[in-house]
Image (tube, rainbow, N blue to C red):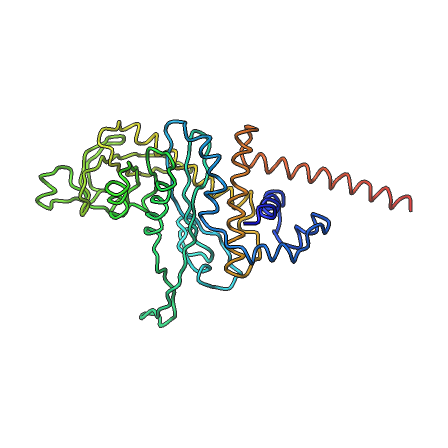
Length: 357
């Protein structure tokens, strides 16, 4: 791994505010590093989740003694509307936009201790199987490894790397039976996971044995109430919590959470699950503060390596946040303000020189 160029390139992704290009970085460095060298760096390396762990491991070890660590897993889409389709650039459903968008689907695994949240693993979804849609007669792509399988790989790898945490948190997209069984039986860890309102639930062991399951949305459970429950096809009992919340537009929504921790207090379930929100901030920051979507890279390898460098950029901002007590957006604004001040002074000089000529 070329650490020097990775350090320079990831710094550039934080500092710049437009398109991130090899020519742009070379110009910024006044030709000290050629754009060809930067291009070769992106094309020849093969950065992976293992390299990310090597990068963040010392910092994780520094903070892991704090109690209440959680592992957070979620996916996001790096939109690339003008890039040719490939095994990693394709169409994915965006829950944020409620429609399919073209781009790269990324699964990330973060560990959070207090106010620090660092990515410790990631996977890019490969849609490497071609098939013909019988209805539309068009060629389609699908992934040979599903996001739920990547979910289990990332949690297992965190345990193999001896990352310390108390709970695994994820939204209802990853509320599959296989994921819960894997966490409980194989990893022997606790989880708090969101559930979709159409899941079938029994509120007693007797109802479960008789197959008397009800749709989750029809259950008479009060806001903030926790009940012991059995999900259909899940072999272990769970604690089920219903939480009603208000959206920014004044409308209300309902959140259903389940955990294999049967002794936990209801308020504590929601308190811990709130820590999951940091991965949403992570997705926003790598896009807006470390140039995830601002690279014109075309090859699969260069696209993945740019993605990796953007994640490294996020790590740098997160560690700076702890030192400076400024959030990622405040840090980025400070850089842009300084750049604008220098540009303003340079403009004044040019105008003065023009008047004297």
